[in-house]
Length: 117
Image (cartoon, rainbow, N blue to C red):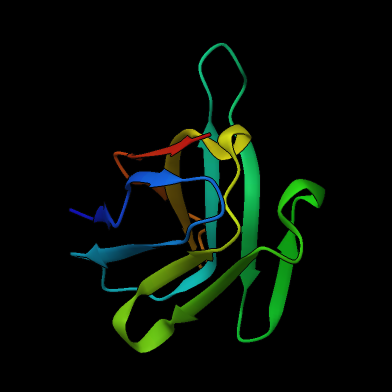
């Protein structure tokens, strides 16, 4: 059974940094897409940063220039480096992975990020 485990969330002051990690276990397959989403209270879940294959990267406009997604495909792990954090970045952050081939999708349990002003 595939499990995604996130870590690295917490409370930080505006302007600070956090690094999220998400590691997949139990998968015999590699992942085509490794992405980060977030959901703030009362809002829909949104894509924050996506990675496809070895070089494809995309970011929400709201985080461009501040967040960086990276991945270690050999370890089935994806990271999100978040700099210059703002109170509006406060949300539960989820990682999502999709396998090559069948396109099976898996979600992590979420990690809370709170940015105080």
